[in-house]
Length: 124
Image (cartoon, rainbow, N blue to C red):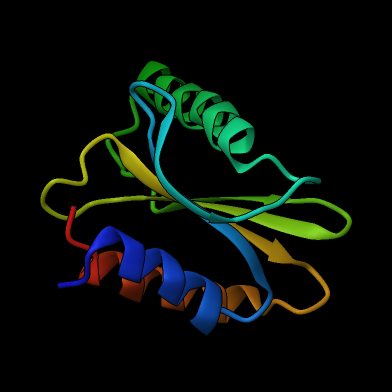
């Protein structure tokens, strides 16, 4: 099992094209840990804003009577991919990993696979 800081560092170092990562509590909108981002990309604001995306999708699924679980949510921009992965493991209820990727350098399939692996090793 890896601690939060180790897992966030692994996201940035092992996932090609990754530029920012955060662990977010979608019940409060607070980022529990962040790494990357910068003056042109406020990761705290992005993390908080994406809680609305998660909440909205969960609410929609409830209204539709869907009993399935969200694995991840992908938002594609012209130059970036934003990946939201809801945590399933113990202690992960109400949390998601938020990963920002450079669209020119990222491989979405590999990023998704690696984020799933990192999630499995994360100790919250």
